[in-house]
Length: 91
Image (tube, rainbow, N blue to C red; front, side, top):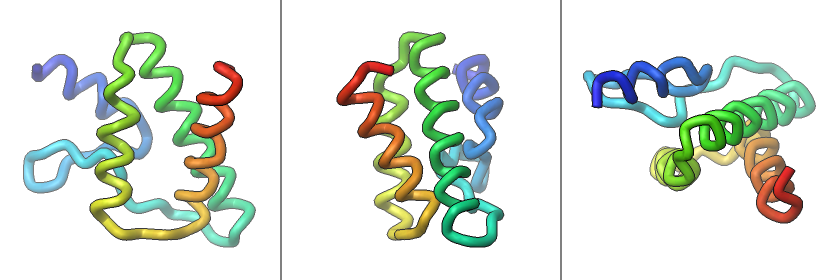
């Protein structure tokens, strides 16, 4: 479990919060376009991790973390857009 947690911490947007994994850390970006692009990069990282480690549940964990925080911003839009593209096209 510790090894897996260390792997997850390699994702730019995963961090620790009071000793627990946080699957959606705060994004530092300015402007709608920049934040959408950051969200798309986060999705690319999640997709690559999911494929590399055969971990499709990662996307569900990220979705849970995103919705639990109640944040609705351009990073979320970019992330959701890229994940939807992946689901529809497999690429």
